[in-house]
Length: 227
Image 1 (cartoon, rainbow, N blue to C red):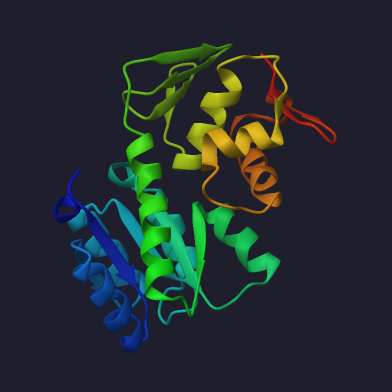
Image 2: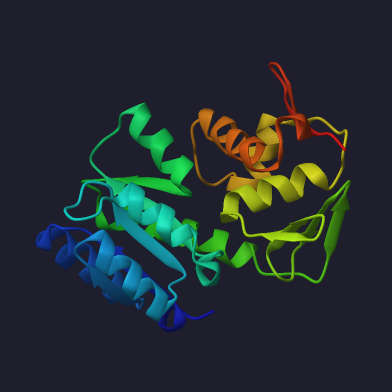
């Protein structure tokens, strides 16, 4: 996919941030769409169907956390990569972001070259999640990669992208203990550093949706899927 065919939605309530980051991304050849609050972001995302959304956390009317949750509920945006843009580095803020369905964080201020490198890494995640024709059957759960959807019995369910990928990985070999490093490499990519709590947050969300007994924690090692 050429840069001119890639749409990035940039959301921030600070005009200077929109101008500076938007300019750098546009100069690199990306198609940039902007919004200054969460409500506008949702509307523009539905229309533009961006490959990447860079979303500020602290915004008026609707903050980034709530906007992210609503964006993840839109099936057409299930493959879109969402990264929070924030000056806040507190653990609770990052955990809240991952729970809402974010893929990563970009901390501001950020140098243009670092930003562009980060964007390229995030877009590689989008490309790596292209749909295949395979389906995975694990107990009463069917993972349909073509539809990017799971079925519990006959009931369909759309999961946030990283939850889907994590479930697909664990369910691909029920009973196998996947080490935390292996999970990070396969689901988040070894080119991006994420906190160790990221996996725990996503496992907890999967347990809430699919049942606690489906996932077993192996302390100090990782997780496995139980049929």
